[in-house]
Length: 249
Ligand code: 13P
Image 1: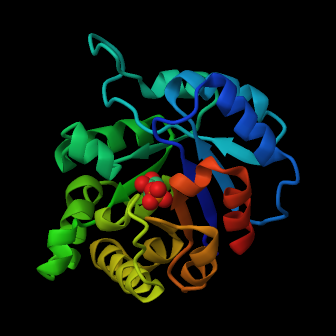
Image 2: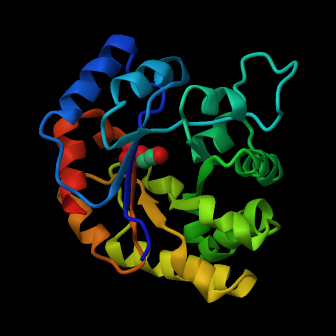
C-alpha cells in the first residue's frame, strides 16, 4: 500500500506570528485521516513549527536544501541543519526554484543524493511548462527530469522518495490539470519508473499532484488510482481549505 500524503508548501508566506496562528488553526479540529499530513513553512520558522507540532500528527518539512555538507555557501541551509532541528523531509526541485533560482536537473541530482545520504525523505517536484504541453512534449520533459535527477540512484534509495508532479501551467493559476490529465501523467510516471527499475518500486512510490488543488476539485483528483495525494500551495495557507483538502483524501 502506498502512503497517501497531503502536503502544504507555504512558499515565502507567513511570518513567525502568522505561522503560529495558522498551525494553531490547523491543529484545532484536525481531520481524522490515514493520510500523512505535512506543512512546509519558511526556514526561519521551522524550529518553532517543529516545537509547536511536537505532539501533532502534522509533520514539518523544509522547502529546499543545499547539496554541500557545510562550508562557504552564504545564505544556504544544509541537510544536517534540517535534521538537527527535527525536520526529516525536504522538498527539492520545485518549479519556482528551477525558474527563479536556476536549479537544474544536475544540481538537483546532487541535492537529492545528499538528502538521501542523510536519510532525509525527499519530496521531488517536477513538471512541464505550458509550451511543452502545447507542443505535446510533456511526457518527454517529465521523463528527462526524472531520469536526470533520480534514475542513477540505487533502488534501495527509492523508499525515501515521494514524487510531486506539478505542471507549471497549473501552479498558482487557478487552472488545474483535469483529473484525467493528472491520472494519465501519473500512470506514465509509474511506467517510466518500472522501465528504469521495476514494478515493485513503481507501485510503492507515492505520486502527488500539485497545481491549483482546492477544496472544490481535490476529491475528484484524489479519486484517480495513480494520484496518491497533493502538494498544495495557495489553499494550504487557509486552515479551513487545507483541512477540507485533507478530508477529501
Ligand atoms: P498552488 O496550489 O498555489 O497552485 O501551488 C502549487 C504548488 O506550487 C505547491 O508546491
